[in-house]
Length: 484
Image (cartoon, rainbow, N blue to C red):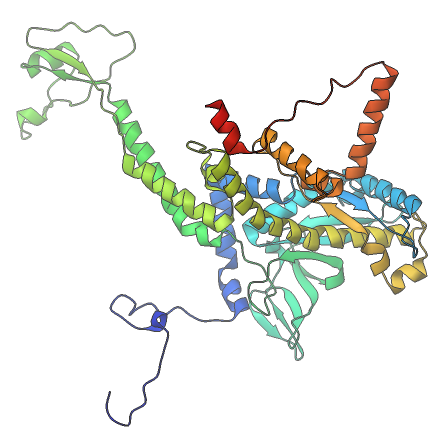
């Protein structure tokens, strides 16, 4: 370095080399990047989910692990003295169960809340966001309803500066705080007329990846190119295999004139074509055809198969990339459980569920909590629950906080071992029945009531449990050694 010249440090990843000379990606704002790509990304991801079985399976698995058959609801309000408000709790749980039916929560009167939640989750996976409108149907038992719509309905991909506010991708927000105040939709059923809706009347769920982001981008965006390559590769392999499969066999003959003549194939009349090229090279052989062979002729059937190990290896690599991007275990993405045992399946499941719990929590915060607040607003205004409207609307926290949504439970990998571990935890006060049943996606009070009901019925019928099963050793390695 020349004397007196100060060198500047930089990250190695920012160096310009022969391999990175033309790698200069645009560094736009978060909303500019989404605005320039959202429509194409949504279309490509939807097409891949429709046409590629692996992507269809991923979509279904993500929905199953995120919301399953709908999250269980509990309401646990307590009095200032700490005692459960049993009457209020039971009434709200009963009304929520009724509201969850399709005729009560869906503006179209068809989708149950479980189906709406799964639809919202599917929309998030494909489009990066889900949108729902709050609709009021006066005179109905449950006047506050939901209407799910496509994110494509948001209009204006360009930015429109309104002074202190700006409209970008159909979302109007405050410049300084990014607080969303309005949505501008293009009504697809009414000649694309623009309809403006206040933000309080819109259910909008998406993951914020950069500060100031007002629209979502699909978590599958990073998979588009590699899954498309895999799909094209697969189609090429299938086409090649089909072409080979269509060749039934080969006929060898020392006298082409004799063979082709007997099978109704004449020489082509164009004498400028060499005689060896004027014979048909393909023959159609129908089912149950008998061929009479002349001396020197031989028929052999095609036994070639296209075994491409390179494709299998490529597919394995792609499914691992998909597993990393989605958080799903590789054996779930590939539907291949070969070589798995209890230890590595348990480790993979634990790792996967850390990601899935985040997705479950997102659905609670983006979907279930706002819908419950909307539901409670309608119940309090209509006087269907014993809650003072003035007190409720002055501070909703006291009435919204007791709501609990239990995500889908986890199935046992090895019931014998895991149940024994849970029994030990319960005996040593390391967990509770509430936590155990919640991990199974169940309401612990309902389960205990069901157990009490079954025990009472057995006693009525003079039946008894068979008794406790002999306690087995809890050390898996010791147990396996003894078995061997």
